[in-house]
Length: 143
Image 1 (spheres, helix red, strand yellow):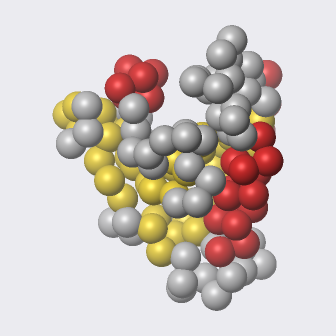
Image 2 (tube, rainbow, N blue to C red; image 1 turned 60 degrees about the vertical axis):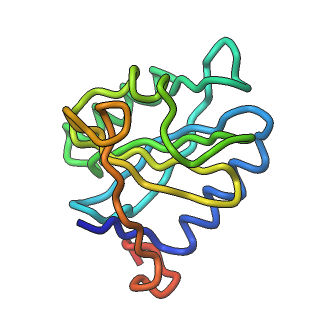
């Protein structure tokens, strides 16, 4: 399974992560199936934003409500490791529900995609997912 993301969305995520560094950036991924159609940054409300992220619950609740009312589906989350790897951390694994949602992680230069599953390859929680941003020709999936 390959995750499709436009180069425009990918570039926006990289810029956002660099802009908030050294704090961790975070947000929601919306789409359909394995296509990311939109990424929406949210406020990081973690106490130590340089080491952790916590998506603003108000933004998450609003997105879940919108999804239930026919809006775009939340297919996952994104966050940054400003001075680290694009692989999930043990903390990421302990916070992730095995719900099949996507976790996109960036360090501001690179991006990797992971699926939160039971018995995953990484820390028993994440499986890697290949990213494809070439097939979209730089357009968002909604264009």
